[in-house]
Amino acid sequence: MKRVLVNGAMGKMGQEVVKTVVEETEDLLVGACDMKGIGENIMDLLGLKGDRVTIYGDLTEAIQKTNPDVIIDFTIPEVVMNNIKTGLSHKVHMIVGTTGITEVDLKEIKDLAEANNVNALIVPNFAIGAVLMMEFSREAARYFKDVEIIELHHNQKIDAPSGTSIKTAELINRNMNNCENNGINEIERIKGARGGNKNGVNIHSVRLPGLVAHQEVIFGGEGQTLTIRHDSYSRKSFMPGVKLALKKITDINGLVYGLEKIL
Ligand SMILES: NC(=O)C1=CN([C@@H]2O[C@H](COP(=O)(O)OP(=O)(O)OC[C@H]3O[C@@H](n4cnc5c(N)ncnc54)[C@H](OP(=O)(O)O)[C@@H]3O)[C@@H](O)[C@H]2O)C=CC1
Ligand SMILES: O=C(O)C1=N[C@H](C(=O)O)C[C@H](O)C1
Image (cartoon, rainbow, N blue to C red; front, side):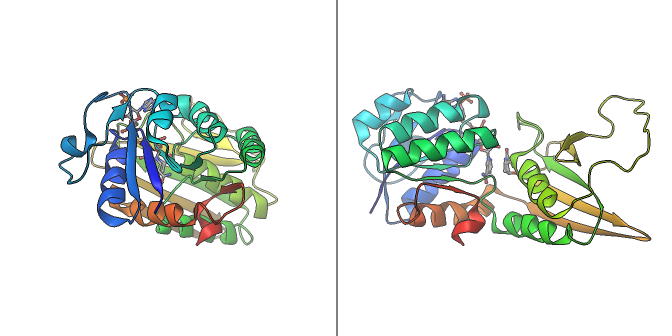
């Protein structure tokens, strides 16, 4: 049984994770941290049965008061690296779903995890379908020279493009040597109309109420296109991945990036 602290516990993902840890795992929720509900009992707030779990407003204090084995972080890109450093330096394993972690950050996380003899599992997308969509896209990239990504999310999402689309572009780029430029001098009449570009792959971000988390990867070739699409219709789609991460966090060694590595 692991002692679990959820950071960002009152957010959209955090609440779902808290419920899942309490109701669907053998692990023990010992702490919660968020900017909302500080001092309150999250069990009451979310209508859950069990002992009191206080919401702290400061991660260091939460760690000191609750002595967790694992922190699950779903906060915001601006603070996630600080959270990871705080957790690892207190020798707590980190499971991180929050976006905004760069390749440079990953190197720093790896070193810190190893120095403190704890593990960090960084997962851009916990939905198994999304992991497969990324894997299939990486494979398809061997056979096409042109690709664009459309990612679509709920209108409360603060960052763009999504972490998933960035990881997809990185994976595609490893297998596609020629996705940089088709040689046309394009005229972009409205700035941003052609999206942003990561590793030679254009990414277009849609934000609308009604959506949860969706992505299309469209490959183009002569006379044909191949579309690989994944849809998360509810945040429940991420929970099997979170539970798997919780199960495996003590078995991995140092830093692991991506759910596919522990499937
Ligand atoms: N890997 C995956 O599979 C998934 C990843 N995500 C990512 O997870 C992150 C969270 O998403 P979501 O739940 O939708 O976002 P929310 O905005 O709903 O939740 C974030 C929560 O973190 C809180 N928070 C902000 N700063 C801190 C801090 N310093 N310490 C503790 N808590 C803090 C926020 O409080 P307040 O609002 O008061 O600032 C809020 O309650 C995003 O980066 C998102 O992209 C989302 C879904 C799946
Ligand atoms: O903010 C979200 O909702 C999501 N964020 C992650 C991302 O940016 O890729 C994962 C998923 O798409 C949901």
